[in-house]
Figure 1 (spheres, rainbow, N blue to C red):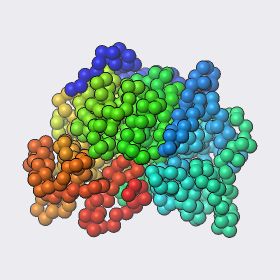
Figure 2 (spheres, rainbow, N blue to C red):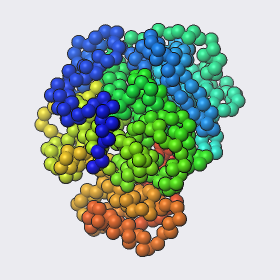
Figure 3 (cartoon, rainbow, N blue to C red):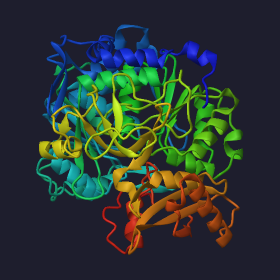
Figure 4 (cartoon, helix red, strand yellow):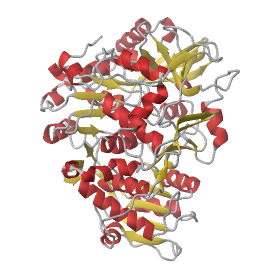
Length: 629
């Protein structure tokens, strides 16, 4: 265990996790109501929580708007002059927005959208790279009650089209092109391909990120109006009224891409989502008013919504956004950004950490990272060796606490997470956040007990949980509430992850249920095997897949990226297999090991195991539009 320093506990909002947690699960409605009262409401709620299978509705009949709490309320005090958004481009170009300046731009775009006929409940698709206009677009939509759907800029035109069609978007906000490493990505070209056969689209707003204006073929797009961002906004007033929203009105749709089938449109609300994201940001990152939160996420994903955009602004702090990747134009770029702009909280992914480990400890050691006081991890489970590298090389002698957070697009907010005041175990995401009851169960919903792997479930509603799946209530029920066999209609949310709970009550995430490899009847999590491989000092990254086997059901194949200067060999293969057998047991023996230079990853850093598996088995790889290479 790694214990927090006394000064960290003394400074923290929460000093005794167990005491507060006990109160929060015995008085959940009072706990969440107290949190909601820290925010502004146009009309108070009549009921904190209404549960009617399979829907939970929070702050029933309450009226608010998340943007009022992100921007409007800060304009009434000195916070209006504080930096809200600090954007750093790939070439280290800088743009700064105080809360007052950010509000002005949001109001102009909100007025522009209204002038284009966008009303409360209309959908707007945002297909932008990681630039300030992306954040401004989200806030402007929410301000007038429109539902935003951010589509990751790395998606193909087919993926974009699918999301536009499903949401029936009225307006598209896109860029002409943008830099990505040493390439120029043409967003507008992909946008035009996507909207050719989308009758719902009436208008397209184009942000000029780097290149000149592109000529639109008017004969093809005669029914769609095109606008330049700068010209459109220059005609708008800098004041705009904020739409009063019911707490359970939709705020945004965010599509989660599965390995097969149509992506699911996860819908989140103004009220419950706001309260959950506000409180988790405040307590997990121990936010104070002068903090700068550097999240390496993209608003195309839920982390970019919750802990890059809404969470920081709800707490009145500064969000730092860096446009590009960690290793371009050199592997020390993130550390250079931290040294220059002095963020206090750094939130990134295990896959990014593992990629940076490959460059060794010398790279981060060249930079002054002393501004940091909290580190965070999100995404795939972080293996202990990556945790320790992060702790040693980025936290350094300060022993910075690492908030290893488990949550999902569907949960909206941190669900299982440490707080700065608690002892940490490398590789464990600690225990549930306040008001959340989590458990590990078998297929009948019965607790499996300590140190046994099973299905991770949540047994109580939480404010930021999804409202529904867009236009697909049947899939909502089937996916989240009908996977586990149970006799009653009590709340039991199926996460789709496997986990186990140790003797101290700490949760260990094994990986996705669909990433489980079944060897001779034993269920082995791919993340657990990968963690055992990466524990070897010679390995930078690893990915494992299961392959059909006539006797064992599945055999295990590992793809290994070695650290610089390490040469592959048969002896090293034997050494790695021995590591896995020692960490997990003989049942987890690796049948094949292939040393590779790269792994198929999305631009957000997630290893695409299904692509490895499809290539290995000579099957169709499916949609690979999100792959970096």
